[in-house]
Length: 69
Image (cartoon, rainbow, N blue to C red; front, top):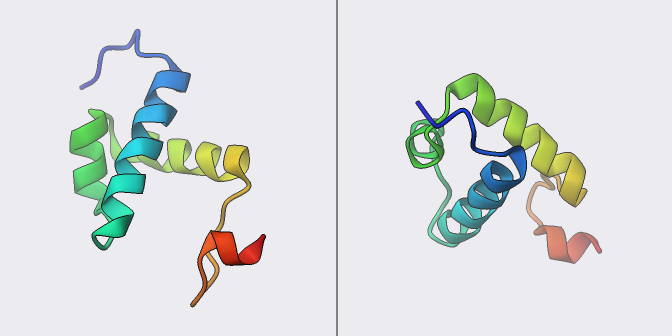
């Protein structure tokens, strides 16, 4: 597992960068995110929730976030 000293800010930045790159190619699986971020599935879910709240992002069926603004 990941170094426990890895800050939340660094983890969220890594996750955001990873998802930005993967979204263009079709998304990422839970396993891919866990492996890349070196965290458990529970931490991935917590981090995704934190990112969603921080970025005020969400899922809008059939539309991108940019179209919502």
